[in-house]
Amino acid sequence: DAGVIQSPRHEVTEMGQEVTLRCKPISGHDYLFWYRQTMMRGLELLIYFNNNVPIDDSGMPEDRFSAKMPNASFSTLKIQPSEPRDSAVYFCASSRGLAGGTETQYFGPGTRLLVL
Amino acid sequence: AQSVAQPEDQVNVAEGNPLTVKCTYSVSGNPYLFWYVQYPNRGLQFLLKYITGDNLVKGSYGFEAEFNKSQTSFHLKKPSALVSDSALYFCAVRVSRGGSYIPTFGRGTSLIVHP
Image (cartoon, rainbow over the protein chains, first blue to last red):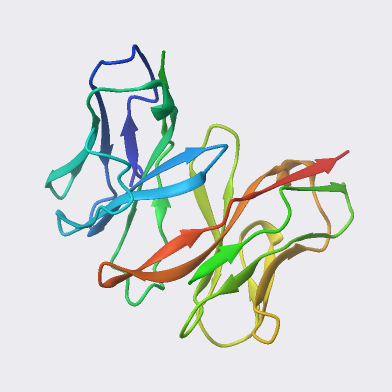
């Protein structure tokens, strides 16, 4: 398996523009997570899905952020409009069930977003 | 509140010396604990986890971690550090969110191994 795939790897955009980050989880994994990593706040969980259904989006910073998972092999994280404070590395991760929290998460390489 | 803490932002060690990266936790119920490593410009990679059983857990790349219930700690160790071990290390503990148990990550500790 190719692992978790994210695109693009790097994104530079101007304030006010729409940004869409993409993720393909590992086949057979039924949980998908979106994280944001910054120096100031560390690694933050934004939202997670189980069987394509959003379960907990309490980490999404504000209404400018939205995430979808139309099928088991694809998810998007959208920021509209983007702001400079959204600059961060965004990670997607997947896992095969959570079995009470014992399962390992597998992370993608991340998308490095810079909003000017 | 359930949480995990990594008290050191950075750990410096000479190559060949033993290393320890500290982690403490605060949870209700059974503490399922994880260590992940992040190399520059890469995603996090799983190193090891404690679920139950032996307090000493062995993982990838020669790392091990010791679960200490009385001290609520799960320190990461390696007997002999390599320069290639230099990376960012994250401790995580499962917490209940949205009806499932989700790993919550510490702030991370930067390990620098000097030649």
